[in-house]
Image (cartoon, rainbow, N blue to C red; front, side):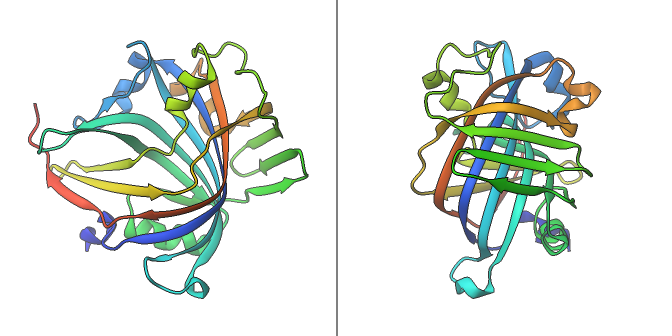
Length: 245
């Protein structure tokens, strides 16, 4: 039944908001975390990136199903910016999933049946005012405080020269990739979004347990963006045998 994990049907949802904090590390530090079919998507051929995506998801359901059959949940996802050259020779830009967390056990259960996204359930909570957004989780060691400020400066020490360059690594990207080493299969999931306008957001505090791991030692916060009110859907996954180099 492993084929079920390859996104066997299209899915749609509405993102009330999606916040992405992107961390930069030397590319040599992240290369070992990727399967052999993927390469890092880099900046200046030096920096590679891990995205922390924080998404308020509404009405997630198989595409075409009525909204009342959907599920609302909060998602914290940890992904690496990557590239993949498919068998048609196209160079695709996307994300490789390291881990996904959600506030709903139901979502974690079904997410692990139909995806390779490595879901776990956690106690993540979001609260907000007109200007501030706070995201906390004791279980995931998550303490994030943000201020809505489109005139925010880039985070101190950012590897980007300006917001225009930083926006290339705002996430999510058009594609997500998973790799089954046992049968040498790559699954490609294409996302289709509307109303996608990443806006800078000011980071007041960002303590993220996942990023505190030794393998991410020295990670630098490079950018932070927010998008709101986004219709989104994922196409049915496409699987191909990786032919290698």
